[in-house]
Length: 310
Ligand code: AMP
Ligand code: MG
Image (cartoon, rainbow, N blue to C red; front, side, top):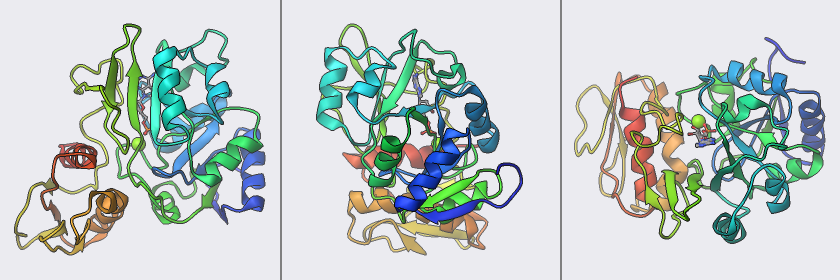
């Protein structure tokens, strides 16, 4: 089943989900579409399965994983959700909001899931395939993005196979992801403060942004991430001769995040554009300016990490 064999790819229909549930039960790795990006799922209560995620991704073991749950009751078996956290879960779940809450001592999660932290990151996904899978298994699913560590996140089954073919058991093919950006991550502190550890599709009212320098507790917020493997120049208005230009709005490029200047569309297309740019013959990538408001904040966060030196 595992090892260097080719990865199986099946549609994310009832048969595919049943097959995925069996593989996960046995401790295997399955890439699953979510409304954000494709996740690489393994059962979160099984240390060997979790070790396989880190191995397949080449992910540093100090970078904790998000645990996906079927609902609020399942989350409460793993973490202590105070009033503020509960209110956020009720308002935004299922959906692209991850809550970092105190881990319960009887959670039964593999220690590597939280990288030894006293907190755990939890989310109830909205995508029908991931929701059906969580309904079909009896355990929570740890699922980071389904790509080799540091590379561009996958928003299609092709993107998953581009870096993980032969390293994982199965891909559930559910087409392209709707949001295209990883979930917003917020930590709910005991004094009621809500801190945004990673901007994303949901802007939580009253949450304060914490930069990577302050986010020592979240070592995964490393600067270089989502890297297409070539130098990336941001805020480019004109293309230089050796650049592949990713356009936005009036700035047309070799591809465009959104011709109409629509941030929702830009988020959905961001990783597909970066994947195309990575495969293009040009040795460098340029990206047109994207406004830094609303969803544009999360898009710029990912672009700056893509552009950071590795
Ligand atoms: P990924 O699964 O690749 O989207 O990355 C998940 C991110 O969630 C990691 O990079 C961490 O920064 C963050 N994360 C997971 N667990 C925690 C936690 N307990 N505290 C803070 N951040 C976390
Ligand atoms: Mg990732």
